[in-house]
Length: 120
Image (cartoon, rainbow, N blue to C red; front, side, top):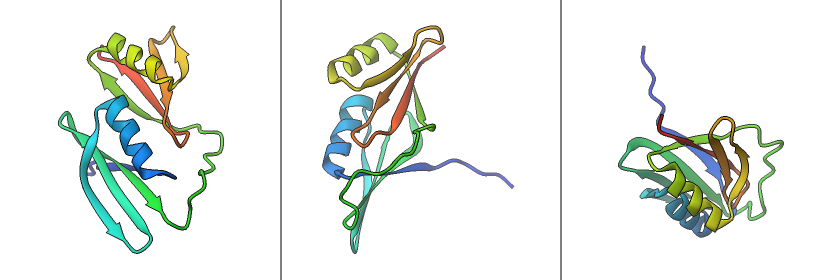
């Protein structure tokens, strides 16, 4: 029996704002969308991987989500760490840096942390 990771879900309060963030910060684009009764699901991805980030907007939950202590994250590897860091610095979304490990984290509009790691 084999398993393949296919997507991670993040619930978002403002779908358009989240889509714009992931496009600018990580180069993801909308791959497909499901419109339902009271919800919209947008699958974001890129050509480097078939793994997708599922952004879910619920009409009955317009407020921010409680992420607890935010002790989880999704990691992205970049081939140009310095350029990525400069972009994220300009966007003002870097929330934590660990220079000893050579990584940093950015925070999306809903408070989800995303780890940025260099290609090693």
